[in-house]
Image (cartoon, rainbow, N blue to C red; front, side, top):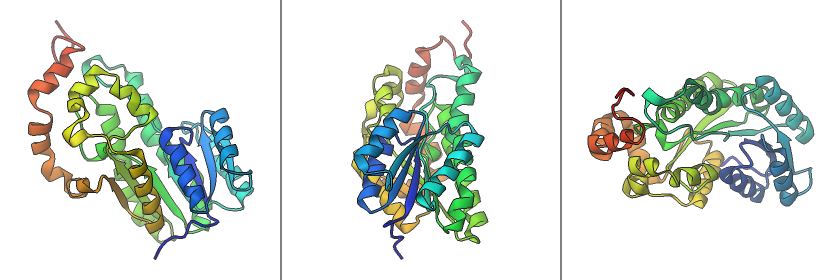
Length: 281
C-alpha cells in the first residue's frame, strides 16, 4: 500500500546539496512538509522561503557529527511540525581519492564520521519521533555500497557500512512499525560529483565516467528516492539495471575487479601519488 506523503513531515540532512534541494522540492510537490537540515544555515533558510511559509518548510543549521546538536534539532522539528514521519539521512562527503600509503588518518576518519557515523546519529536522534508516527528512515548510500572502487577506500567503507547498518536496523525496528531503507544511486551530477569530474585521477579510475560509470540524470535519482519512500522500500537502486548486481554483488566482485578495474588502470592511478604502492622510492 502506498505511503501517502500528504501532510507528512520529512526531515532531510544535507538539504543544501543538489540532491537535498531537489528532494525537498519533490516532497513538497507530494504535499509533505519539509525540515531542511544542513551546516549551511543561509542556504536552507533561502530554500525554505522558496518552498513556502514556515508551516510547510523551515531550515535548521545542523552538524551530523554532533549527536547533541542533532537531537536538539530533531526535537525542534517535531515540535514545530507537530510530528516527524520520515527522515532522509542525506548528508555526506566524497572523501579523498588516493592510495592508503599516502592518505592522512584524518581524511579517513572524517569520511567515516560524516558518511557512516552521521547516518547513525541522524537515525538515533530522530527515532523517538519517527517511532511515534510509525514512520520511515532512509539513508542515502551509494552504488559504492556494492561496487568498491580502488583508491576510494574511505568512501567505499562508509557506504558499505551504511548498507550493513540499515540491514541490521530493519528487523530491529520492524516490531515498532518503523521501516528502514537505503538508496544506492550511481554517479549523478551534484556538487560533490562536480569536484570529482575535475580530478584527472578520478576520471582515470572511473573510466572517464563512461560505460558502467555513466552519469545518471539527477531527476532520475530524485524520482526513485521519492517513489521508494512511498513504497517504504528496503533498497532503492538507481539505475534499476544495477539491481541484480547490487543484490548479488559478492558474486560479481571478482569480475568487477578484473574487467572494470584492471591492474593497469589501478597502477596508472597510483602513479599520480607515488612511485610504488607503499609510498617508498
